[in-house]
Length: 410
Image (cartoon, rainbow, N blue to C red; front, side, top):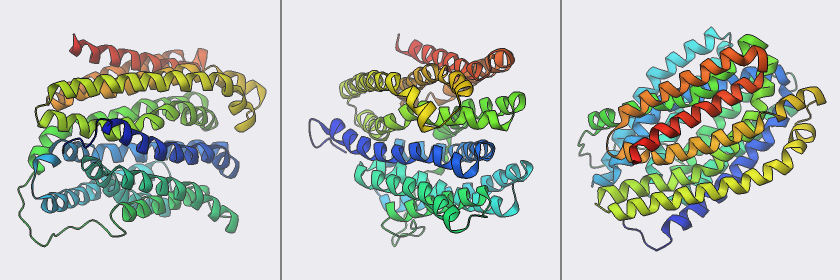
C-alpha cells in the first residue's frame, strides 16, 4: 500500500495515540476500583491469572499475527487469506485453550471461572488476529474504536456486576468482564459479525506453513516477553505472599504499562508501514521511518517521565490509597520500572529489522538471556530489597536486551 500523504505516519500515529490514551485511562481507572471491590489479595490473584491469560494469547496468536503483518500485502485474494487465517486461529486457540484451562484448574480456579476464561480466550485470539489484519490494511480508526470499546467493557462489566450482585465472586465478575469485552470488540471490528470462515469464492494459497516458519519463533518470543513480569509476580508471591503481588501489580500496571500502552500506537502503524517499505523495496523509506519513530518514542518518554516525577507521590498515596510505610517502598520502584519500559519499547521497534530479515530465531535466544538475568536478580535480592529487586531486575533485563539488539546495527 502506497503512503497517501507525506505525513502518513504522523496522521495514523495520532489516530492510534488518541484511541490508546482513552483505552489507557480506562485501565488506569480500573486499578484502584478493582482493588476496592476485589480486595488487594484477590486483586493480586487475578493479576496473576490475567497476566497468564495474556501470555497464552501472545503465544497462541503471535505467530499468526506476525505472519498476517508480514504477508498480507503479498496476497491478492484477501477474502481467502482472511478466512484461512480465521480458521487457523480457531484451531490453534481451541488446542491451547485446553492447556490454559488446565493451568487455571491447577491454580485452584473454579470450574465456572475456567470456562469463562477459556471462552474469553478464543474470542481474544480471534480479536488479536483481526486487529493485525486491520493494521495491515491501515484501518486505524476501526482498530482504535474497537480497542476503546473493549477497555470500556472490561472496566464497566465487573463494576456493574458488583453493584447489582454484591455477593458475586471477584473472579466471576472479572472474567465475565474479560469475556464480554473481547467478544464485543471482535464483533465491532468485523462490522458486528463474526469473522467469515468460508468466502464466496474460495481460492486458498495455503499460507499456513509459511506463516508458521516465519512467525513461530516470534510466538515463543511473545510468550517469554510477558513472562518477564509474570515470573516476577510468582517470585514475589513465593517469597512475600499474594498481598505483596497485589501491591507490586498496582504500581507495575500503572507505571510500567503506562508507557508501553501509550507507545503501542507506534507498533500499530510503524510495523505494517516498515514491512510495506521492505516488501516494495523502499530501503531509504524504511530507515527514515525507523529513525523518526525512535525520535518520537524518546520525546514521548521525556514528556511522560517529567509528568510522573510530579505525580507519582499523588498517585501512590492519594489515588491508590497505600499507607505510608508501603507507599514509601513502592515509590522507589517507579523510576526503574518506567525506564525499563522505555528501553523495551525502543528494543521492540529496533528488532523489526531482524524480523523483516527473517532472523526471528535469534530474538528467542536474546529474550531467554534477558529473562534469566531478570529472574536471577529478583530471586537473589528479593529477601534483602523486596519489590526493588524485581524492579531493578526488570531494568537490567531491558538494558541487556537493548544492547544485544543494537549490536545488529553496528
